Image 1 (cartoon, rainbow, N blue to C red):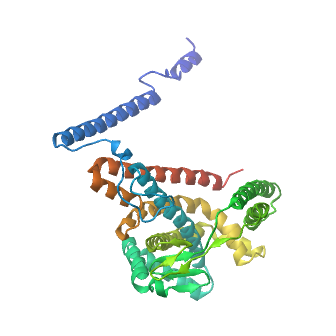
Image 2 (cartoon, one colour):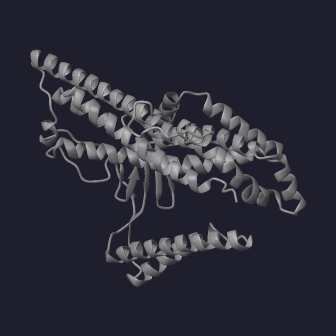
Length: 396
């Protein structure tokens, strides 16, 4: 046997399904771990069901089809006490998502502005941004929710003496505002908005490809926004330009007609937004500081203004540092919305507590809430991971 043959046999690859294969052993260990976890979960669930049965405690999710028997003070969709529990949980989920999604958008805008403001050359702006971060970041979120709620219910005037600006009313009953009277023309406006959004998306893709090919920067914010608004305007005009409004009016005991935001919703939204924005501001500040100082000097050497430098040079490079901790703040905001039960906002936790007290299905109600928050967190993480992959700097 030649030395070459011996060397070939010495480095011969291991069999794929051999116990000597590290990949095969790793697969077996993972399968065993999954089996053990499944057995542990089965044991806990089985033991829980036996104990509940011995104590005469009913179990199962059949209660979801039963009549709820309670009203919900605030909902995006009609609901009354004669409807089933599953619909009540959907109302609670919609309330949670409404405050979470709006809060994420507002917290991102405020946090970015405050974070960038901490680099301002104006000492007053820089100091105000620093004070905002230190104040709102160091006060517990529950206290902030209570503070905003007490502000609306104790400081603001009654509905009969509501503050009025045009057709807007602000009082202890919340914020009342005019809303459009729905007609077929609004459908055309919605179609126009969707068409404008599609054109804006195509334009942004073309602008990004043009920038990669030539290095010339085109508007990727204002022009796409103009396309969306233009599409909505064309659709609105095509639908007959409906302009009728249902405006609120001052009643004897309350503001009547129009749309309304309850004090509970406003308090939750302001508390979550202001609290989370303080953390996002620090995330943005840290991300901008992670960019090499030479990038700022190069931008100044090219004659870019301070605003252009931040928008076109610093922030795009800082995104790879900003996005991962920003995802954590989005998750925190969504999960912190469960504290809204403290001020009476009917989110999914509040609905679950009411259903639990009426049916006694504690395990089932808590499981539903856990699945809802787990699903929303996983969806948020998945979407942000995709965005992070797109924003990552590609090496050539």
